[in-house]
Amino acid sequence: MNKVLDSGITTHLPSSHAKKRKKVITMNLSELLFTADANKIIEIQLYHFSQALKQYRNYIHPAVEIRKGKSKEITQNDAKLAWELTKKIIFEI
Image 1: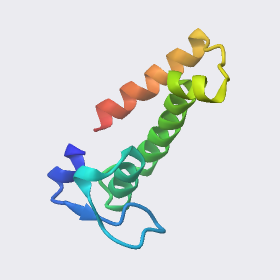
Image 2 (image 1 turned 180 degrees about the vertical axis):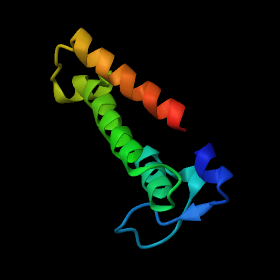
Image 3 (image 1 turned 30 degrees about the vertical axis):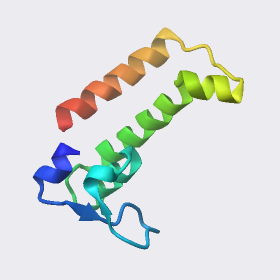
Image 4 (image 1 turned 90 degrees about the vertical axis):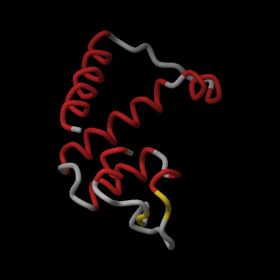
């Protein structure tokens, strides 16, 4: 959020199919990523890495696992991959 706000953007269409502008401070993670990508604040590769990591986070989220009655054995390799992506995203931002 700070990266978008520091770029002088306070409102934006939060997706390609949005009908009206939304305040940056009320955007969720997907909307912030879309806004950052659309305004060339982050590179496209970082955008896609971030989306992939967000989906992984959603997949392993305990509340999701309970709600859907599913859980997956998360391997050490899964965790290492997610951590490396997280570090790359943090260093890029």
